Image (tube, rainbow, N blue to C red; front, side, top):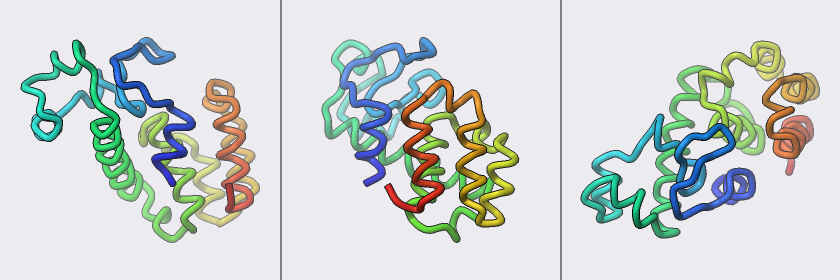
Length: 155
């Protein structure tokens, strides 16, 4: 379910492209400048170097593999930063992972009022705080959908 939500929000591109911030990106929002592609990932995709990714692109299976790796990293970072995420229902966990996937865990951690509300399980306030942000003005409908899911506990 999460990967499908990420595809809906991030898109799926098998060639390297510049995202809205001008960052080289591929697959389902893989930031090639920050995260790049590890040697293990290149080996799994059967590419000798990242230059081949830039010139040839990747397959859909490669994109799914990279996205699964990204989600695992984001989930681990998010749980280290906010262990309370583990106590939330699956929909609200998905909302927070989606947000972290989009903006990175360090930036998501700056949503102090949202996190205070999440800790108190005041999901109406958490949703309001999500929408009261520069992020919400940047991603518009994504923020609205995620805030509604945070508030209601359902997509």
